[in-house]
Length: 466
Image (cartoon, rainbow, N blue to C red; front, side, top):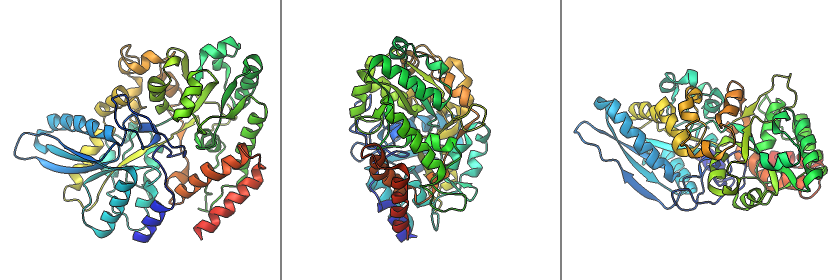
């Protein structure tokens, strides 16, 4: 297992700001934490420097659980939720000892600990791009299906699927990361474009052309360092990076269609590559904040970026469902983007209790209320989506920022949020790296023919996987 795990972990240096995209992101969180190198959806809490914090828990019958994370903000969130667990379960109190580490250091240390059978924590956060390495070969993580069961009916299934293998679930999701559209309504209205009329990708392209002709400004970004829009459009077509037989298929007809369509949007002049290659990076925030681009197709966690880094857009941005190819076709309305799966080490002496506690911390209604209130993410437990006292709370900073209630869009797509199968395949990090560093740049920056670029990347990856 060791060789397989390390090969996947070290085959590409992926920052946590890329998960389903690979644009690196460095930004401080709202509490002033150090620069973040973390999963793109959660970098409102930076990884910072390594450090350990311990809960203070009274009583003699308390179980200590060691937790590893690369997400500084998770330390406080887990502590707060563990205190609620202790209050509700006085006979099963836990004391969390939380160690925050640098992204690559933690994942590599975990790999070695699982292989050697020594030094592993009880609980660990594993970034989505790294997760496939830990469910390959001999799996050292506990199947969490039993502790998920009490919450399963309200949890978005596709977010469990990305941490699953052979019918077993090995990671607890933090949020949905549903892909939505963020429209700068002030700019669109000035060009007589109504975002509510945009239902299909053809509508989206036509609106972009109309907007560009009226303003001379770009409508939306063509990605080169991430695949947020690419992955959505591909999944809506029923495509993937790996076919149903498990074969690499990055040059499939569906992928050719998607990238060709985006190239056609670029050729109108209304869509252009954005500084940094995608909307979630420091360079892009500035051009969106100044009105150079009007629309972002991004996972819902981008709400936190608007509130923290695009403050000039306060009160101007509406959140809506993304376009689809055909409104009558029954395709996915959205897919999840980004993710950190919380896993339990199977060999831990308190693995069962750790699993029960973390399922409560990640999946319960109480926890998911805090996921929205504190982190600004779309909760994976959708039972809270209909609680308007929570989702439309006028004192909530996200509710105050956006032009319409953020959960309006989520509730429209609630029952039709999918995923890509490639995301939990051990080849995904290499595929992701190829697209973000080679394929998309070849097409949208260098003008290479779409099919030629995809065939070249197919060959590059096949050679790597031999």
